[in-house]
Length: 215
Image (cartoon, rainbow, N blue to C red; front, side, top):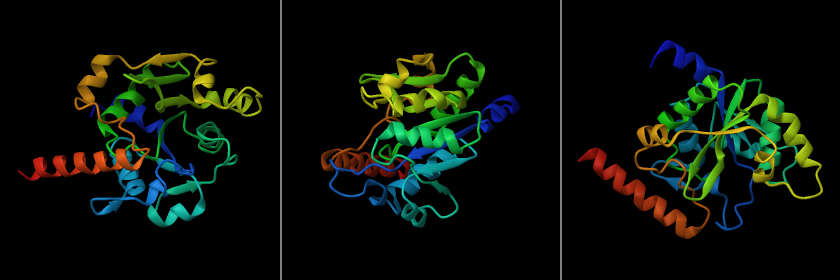
């Protein structure tokens, strides 16, 4: 990696939002097992391959799953991802944070690093986000530290707490498709497991990838 890219990535910390209730899954997603580790441990490990600093936003008991990684309590745990994002922006001093949910087992380190690099090269943007077939991915995006005030305003707004509403108030720059395709050719970095059916698919993908790597 070039020195400039390393410096740019260092100015961005990784953040996993793990304070959700996992209602659709029916059990705590962070503690699900994939291979020989928990889902949260896998995500933190993969993020560390792309970014030097990684934090988790969620309840204190998650620290047992990820020794050595700081767990920051969500100040507004019943608000959803917006509350977790605000807690991260309020407590993590990095210039930018890459934010993702605790349900993306195949997050791509190279793609995350490329997004941090792209955000550093475009300081005019509040957010650098990836666009997929589902639309913009607010939980696979880089947020500037200056987004904290807008996030706080959305927390006290009476018309909902969606991340999409927050993005509407910010300057958002999409990661070019050519970069996403180059760094994440499988397109699996944003695969999210919200339900038991999704989890079965994730385990099948993991088994397939594990077999291919040992072939």
